[in-house]
Image (cartoon, rainbow, N blue to C red; front, top):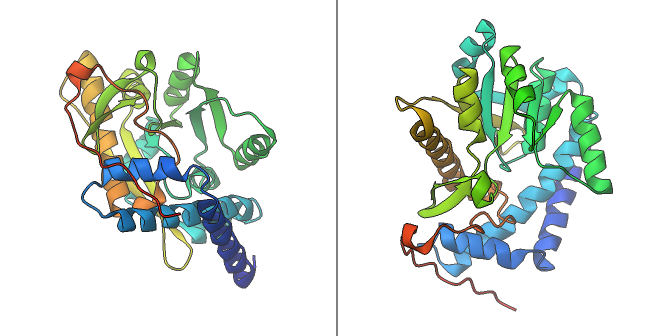
Length: 288
C-alpha cells in the first residue's frame, strides 16, 4: 500500500480523534481516570495526555482499516516483536500459551499480526453488538482470529490450549464483584478478571502479556512480558498471577499513557469500604 496515502489516513484518524476530544466525548471519564492514576501530574499535563489518547485512538481505527488490505509481508514489516524469544519455546513445544491483552495501542492490529504469523488467536471477549462492531468482528474472523464468549466457554478455552494454540484474554476492563478479584492498579484496587491466570494454571500453559507500541515511523513494536510464574497454589496463585499481569499493564501505561483506553471506567466496581485504603484522588477540572 502507498506509504504516503497511509500516512495521510493516519493523520486524518488523529484529526478525528482530536475532534472527539474537542466535542468532549467521554472526556470527563478520561480525565477522572488520569487524575486517579497520575495525581502527581498537573491538570494541564493530564489534559495533554487525554488529547494524545484521543488522537491515538483515531490512528488505531485507521490501522484496522489498513491492515485488512495489507499482505502478510506488509504486516510483517508493519508489526515487529520485541521478546518473541520468550514465547518461542512454548510455540515450538506445542504447549499452548495464554496472553493477557487489553485496550492498549493498536490492539486490533496485534491480533491480526499474530494470525498472519500463523498463530491465530482464540480470544475471550464480551459480546459486541451494533453495525460498527459487526464490521469489526468480520475483520477479526477474516484475519484468522476466533472469538469465544465470556460466558460458558471454559471447555472451549481449555481445548485451545490442549491443541497447542494461543488463548488471548482481555484483562483491563472493570468486572462485577462476582466475576472478578480485586488487585492493585495505580494504587487503587480494581476488580479484574482472573481468567488469564485460571486458564494458564488449569491448562498448564505459560502466561504472557503483550503491548503494541506505536513507533515514530508509524510501525508497531510488540513488547512481550513474561512468562509469569507463581509458587503458590489455588486461589493464592490466581491472585498472584493476576496481580503480576496487572502490574505489567500499569508499567506499560506509565511508559506510554496515551496508548491506553482511558474512556473505560476501569475502577467503577469498588471493594467494601473496609477493604480499600483511602487514596486521595484530585477531582479533574476542565477548561471551557
